[in-house]
Amino acid sequence: MKNYLSIDIGGTNVKYAELDDSGHIIEKGKVKTFHNKDEFLKVIDDIVAKYSEKEIKGLAFCAPGKIEHTKIHFGGSLPFLDGVDFAQRYRDLGIPVAVINDGKASVLAENWLGSLKDIKNCAAITLGTGVGGGIIVDGHLLNGAHFQAGELSFMKLRDSDNDFNSFAGSRASAVQMITRVNEKLGNSDKTDGLAAFKAINEKDPDAWEIFEEYCNRVVSIIVNVQSVVDLDAIAIGGGISAQPIVVKEINRQYDKLYDSSELIRMTFTRPQILDARFKNDANLYGVLYNLLLHVNGEKL
Image (cartoon, rainbow, N blue to C red):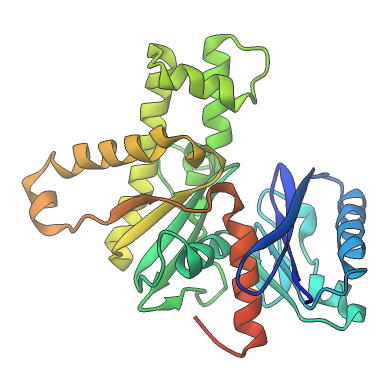
């Protein structure tokens, strides 16, 4: 039986997987993301060529940035992707090609097979290099007038600055949080997430202070989203969500805010804040579901 190829383009890695139409992963892998356009596209071409030999019956992508139909605009943390259209690039394969924003892929995955399964009002927040988001309201994926609904990295979290450092993509970046913890601890590898979370789980005072502040910033994002679209549940994904303490502390920080004011507590309904089932693999499932919806002529 022919299967599908999912490719999740991230700021750090490109992940890929062969899946069947029920969402079962046959095999998967990942490669480092090149930040040079020609090198990057060659890597993608090589992955596609490898699986094309198996006669895959569909090709599904997600990437950062605004995506209009199958064309990437700007590319978020990978601006060299601006103008890339994977459906056009691989049109000679003669198979369906679908492309979606990475945050939207995440919420599709969780709503299809994960912790948000069959919930009609929900969102997924992906904590990584920036902050990805996907929102479903009344059973419909929000795209927006300009295909940028759910671009949570562009939520402004601080009034005192007027550059990107005041936006969620910087202030709630998991990568930046890990860097700050490692710098504070004096670790030589500033990108070592395991070392950072070892200190966080041990409640090292310096690491914990940074982590608490970080989780409180994520709560600000959740509250702002909830105030606009009124959801039942929000799933937290991304690489750091593999650490149980992340969602636990986000819930604790939310409850502190919720209980701080009778006005908030009595009038503002609290959404469930859940672990994403698929963690850092969510997009591999979500892009497949997006492709299947397109192939079958369905809309979420």
